Length: 359
Image (cartoon, rainbow, N blue to C red; front, side, top):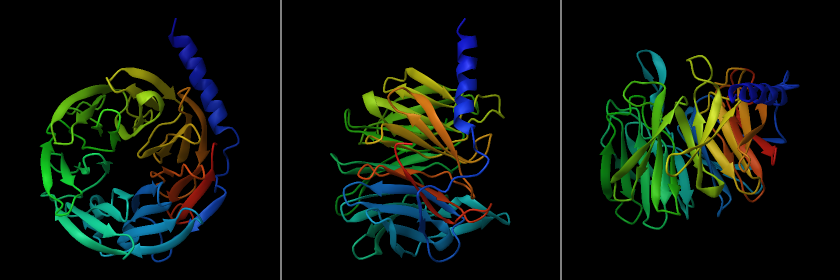
């Protein structure tokens, strides 16, 4: 009796989300990125306190810094690995920059060659480089401001691992935690100030694409538990209201799993499945707008910015996006604006698209 209403709901959502989607959207504005055409990039991040935005720009081997108040490009900190080749093809797994976040006057950047970069934002230069001991890229991360600890994921190693690094002077490596069971890497991390723990997305457990998990880790590097997930193959992870975790599912209907996003509580209970959009990488949450956002570049119906009501756990709309690999998304809680980089290929702008929320 529960299946039929669910199918009807999914159909209705799809009709709302994709009605009138023949032309891709360009938002209310565009932030132009100078230099080489923007085709290879990764995480975007807004530091709410400083109102600076950061974009991991592999095409230009650096971190682009944007004034989020004026939405203008300020400059670039270069000297990073850039897009590297493997077996004659570009490989994200060994390239960089990748993950990025900022607080105070520092930005922390996951780079290729398993390097973690520390950037002085005022001086616009790299001031420290920490080798995390792998051979592939250092990727996504989050920060515990209470203990001044950064968690960095090296998800593309033969044995994926996370590293806990002190952000205090000296930048001591606190712990390294391996995940041999994470057979498709380690993805987005989310710090929870309510319990002082990190939550980290594991898309796949023990070569079973239908099973994944959310690892719970304390700031000393101790693994508390792994909450199981299923039918999602989750990449993006972010906290929303009510201590709920929004998990961006890469599932997109072509691997036997429904196109959807999942919502969990911190105990691992499934709160909601939201059908209609899949193929997601990075996700973001805006408290100002009361919405989650997904960079769904591998959505079955084409690239979209997914928009979800964070209180009702429903799909609001799916905004079609023109341009290569729009998998990265960030939200500005001061202005309510949402940012999505779109590559110059596939008819894209090679810029950061700006949307006014709530959508």
